[in-house]
Length: 356
Image (cartoon, rainbow, N blue to C red; front, side, top):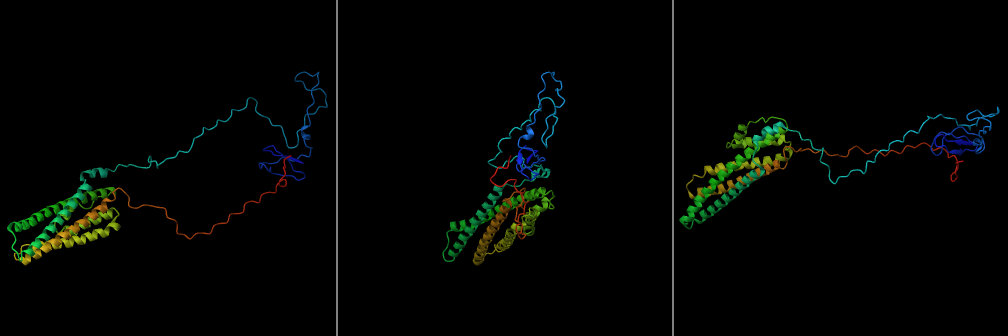
């Protein structure tokens, strides 16, 4: 018994068992035909008689047309030429590869009017602030060294009379260095104040907010002696809070604040005791001045550390970075693969060709 696939046209010898699906393309098998192999194609139309004209029906009333095998039928097709072949798509070529990440389309440049309007408040550069602070620290170190030498000369002067030139040089060199230190400390305070004002303006403008402190309030809180001990660190803490960096800069700011308070207290005490006339009072004041210079040097060093802590990251750069973290949910046991449909029994046994 033969069954023909309606899709691929393969003829399958199903023997005495009817099948439904084609084993090759899984198409539908047509109804089986019980004719012998090739018998359905043996019927041929009889040739027309010689006496019949062109296009005239064949003579002989007993002529029957060719009989199609079971499962086949005649199909009418459209006359004319075959339809044009489908247009093949042009190959796209190889996939593009880049040696580096393309930068086009990854950067959105939005103009911020607030940042441009604040251009008049641009503060000193990083190099200017760093140079001023380092120069002030060098002068403080030199001043402390000069007063150490002066203290040593005071000890020597207890038993030996000093030369007038040496005594004059030691006395007025200390005064000259103290004056230079005063000017450098004031210059450092002014430079740091200008930087703080510009940094706060940029930080608040970046967050689309207005600075609650006016410029004159910032200058008064940072430059007025003794008042700046209470307000200047507060202004710096507010800046760190706006930039969302208070978690990392709180400790350096607090340490700088404490050392600055001690340095100011020792400096005030040194100035108050500098008018003494006895030799022991002068020696004690010299030691106090040395300690004051060293504490001022430490305070400036900590201020430089706080300044660099802000300057390591521009105002525009985000502090938070979002990364992918694996979920902490307990791992679920792997699902067993669901059993698929049981394949149908093969038409023929393995190792044999089932096609007719």
